[in-house]
Length: 112
Length: 115
Image (spheres, each protein chain N blue to C red):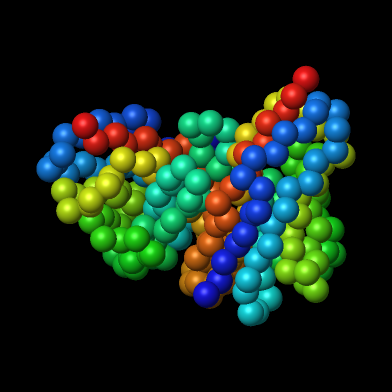
């Protein structure tokens, strides 16, 4: 069965430091991959997506992600974290017929 | 402004009562979805609809029901058969039909608490 693993439940990063959130997927065919961000009590906002082509994709708010087929990974990165980036981040894979499978999320804490 | 609205934002229900959560979109999207979110479990698909008057069960449909009478509306009813209904419910929509991958956009959510 298709699955998405986000191995880090919580991550704390100092403001201004770089960030990498890990995502691994299990899916036999070509994956369609997404990163969403959720602030407390809010809906999910799309950060970026990978469908095909260049394996390094740029998103909103200065985020980027790199698709590595050999490692079944789609890690999210940001070179310099701002306090407003504190939120929960979800990786998701589309398994066909519009069904999204989500990871369990990584909560990002930003320290001053 | 185009978007997805969910109402109410907070909902309280007594055990044994059915309750309906509203989801409306003005994005002209064909497909709509309902997810349930519990702490530490990510999002799980309850029901989805790819076209008016048609819908399919997701991974956790037991105790829930939906209807899709209009393209812009996809209400979710949480019935008394749902064993543990307290959760955060998210509605989403996307523009493509089955078999074509497209991006899902989410509403702000409804927090349901059973007293």
